[in-house]
Every structure is written in C-alpha cells, then in structure tokens.
Image (cartoon, rainbow, N blue to C red; front, side, top):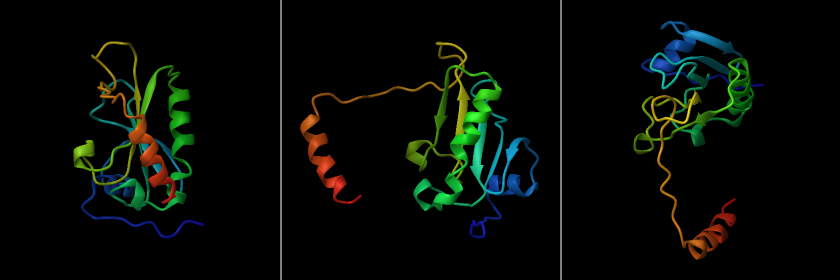
Length: 142
C-alpha cells in the first residue's frame, strides 16, 4: 500500500493532479497521472507523473515508479507508435524544467529534426580502462 503522497502547493504538476489546472488526461491510477503535453515536441507527446511530489528520481519512493513504464507502453501502443523516446530528466543542467519527477513519451514521426526529440550523443572513445575502474567503484556501492 502506498504511503500518503506528498504534494507541493506551488507545483504545476501537483495542481494538475488535484484538478486545479485542467489537462488533457489520458490515464490516471492511484499512483500515476498522464496527460498530453500542451507544448509538444510532436503530435501525441505525453507526460506521466507520479502522484508523489519528488523533484528528482532518487527522491521518489519506488512504489510510485511501478506503473510508469506500463503506462508509457499503453500510450505508445494506443498511438500505434513505431519510433518514440521515453525521457526523464533530473536537475536543471540535465534539462529538467518542472521540479516534479515526470516521464515524457515523445513520438518520433520521421527521421528529420522537425518533430520529436532531437539530441546529440557525445559518446567518448578509448575509455575502457576508465569504465573498468568506475565499474569496480560502483559495484562496491550497489
């Protein structure tokens, strides 16, 4: 059973969950709320928000994550999406705008940069030794 969800009076997503701000609701459960983004990157861009107010993923109780991917899958399936991104950002420099954990389902209708998520991927090369060292360090913390 879920703990009592935290809420923040000034949070736009908490206000949407409470019905204080209208939304184009898609799926609502005891733990999650999803709706169409009114500033979409493409047609069908949706958001899934846990009903517990936490600014970053690591601050959110695990129980509020249980339904997120199944809801994302339902939204993608309902739209018949073949190409799409599931995005979740934490912190300003990681492009988080609203300080309430949320997940985007962003359709990518074609290969152009005109619609959908457009990203660069600055992959590093020749770092296997660094990855190996960090792997050992991280395993000690897991």
